[in-house]
Image (cartoon, rainbow, N blue to C red; front, side, top):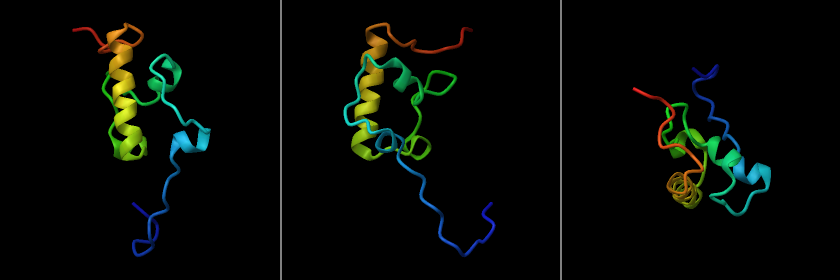
Amino acid sequence: MRKHPGAPAKPRPNPLIAAGITYIDYKDTDLLRKFISDRGKIRSRRVSRLTEQQQRAMARAIKNAREMALLPYSSTTR
């Protein structure tokens, strides 16, 4: 809960813009892991704070990295 309910919410910074990243590469697994949950799911735009175009590029890069076996499809075993 916010301290002041009538006050506007402070916008959170975009993590890619703050880091100066312009191109999302599927081989950069350290970056991609920041946008995957501990269960192996791609985080939503609301949680990851990416723009629509960045979220699509991030999802595509994560899926490519999974296909190339750089990232796991899921991190848990049943």
